[in-house]
Amino acid sequence: KTIYLDNAATTFPKPESVYTEMDYVNRNLAVNTGRGSYSLARKATEIIDRTREKALKLIKGKDVADIVLTPSATIAMNVIIGGLDWSGADICYVSPFEHNAVMRPLHLISEKYGFDLIELPLKSETLEIDFEKMEYMFSMNPPTKVFATHISNVTGYILPVKEITEMAKKYNSQVIIDASQSLGLLDINMNNLMAFAGHKNLYGPFGTSGFFVRKGTKINPFIAGGTGSDSLNLNMPKTIPAMLEPASPNIVAVAGMEAALDETIGRISDFEAKEKELTEYLVKGLEKIENVTTYLPLEDSHIGIVAFNIEGYKAEDVGTILDQDYHIAVRTGYHCAPLIHKHLMDIEKGGVVRASVGRYTTRNDIEKLLEAVEELSEEM
Image (spheres, rainbow, N blue to C red):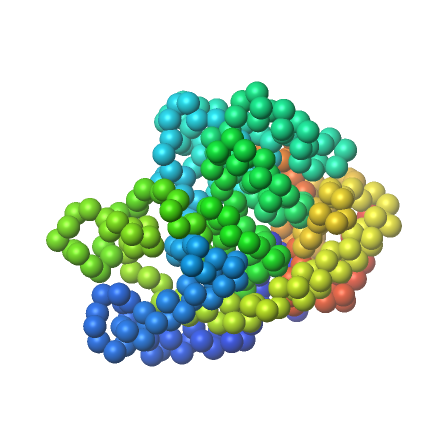
């Protein structure tokens, strides 16, 4: 049996109710929603409506926000970035922890309009956001847009997104949060624009992602197509979410997401406590092993993900050995996060080894990983 420690990429396995509900809907209700008045279409549409309500409940966004469903967080970020108003005068800040789901579309749009992307500053000793320097940078070059991930998919650092948002709002800046690693794991309140990935800590299937948008926030259609209504009009609908959700909804995946939300609502604090405990257990174990380097923020701002390297090995080699000899699945490399690795100074190692825990991870799983890492370190 494989010990799965790549939950930051996608959580696995999913709750049994997710598999059961998807199978039922795939066999009985896999029809186009919003495009038919017959009973099956109405029942399928009700699944999507309920899923929206439950997702908004999770972030305390009922009556103040809408949710736009997309196939992935990458698509969600492209729809957000492509739908915002941009100009050459923009001053756009990004955290050094951003995923390429954010950085690549931002890079494309910055080349089109001719503005620069500025990294938020970090404290060199802890690799946490340096608020004093950030406040100075904002005062010298006031932000128009700020992008910040909530939890780093490389180091597990929980960014202080509330404080970043408050500081940015002093300059009337738009703030866009990537909650791909945090929704379903941490208690989250609604931000103006916040993307999420349903297949990560929500424990939904692939194809269930999107973003929350506060009512009144201006965003333009980015992807156009059929919506099942007003079909003779070549313009996209004027209201959210319809204006941002062309194409046939993936009703089977959404049904799985609804089941995942049912498993999540009301249990966030339990999931957070368990992952905190497992994370600390793994960190303390690694710190006792010679020839192991860990890349850690402060303990109270860290959860779920532990990045490390073993002296004498490339990160990729460690991942291969753990898989082939110990049946342990971890992730290695740069994790689609291009900015943070210059701070970690891990380029010659080929990035880092990333172990990420989840709801179904056990202490025994962590112990097996620690035993394997110790054996590898002793061989050098």
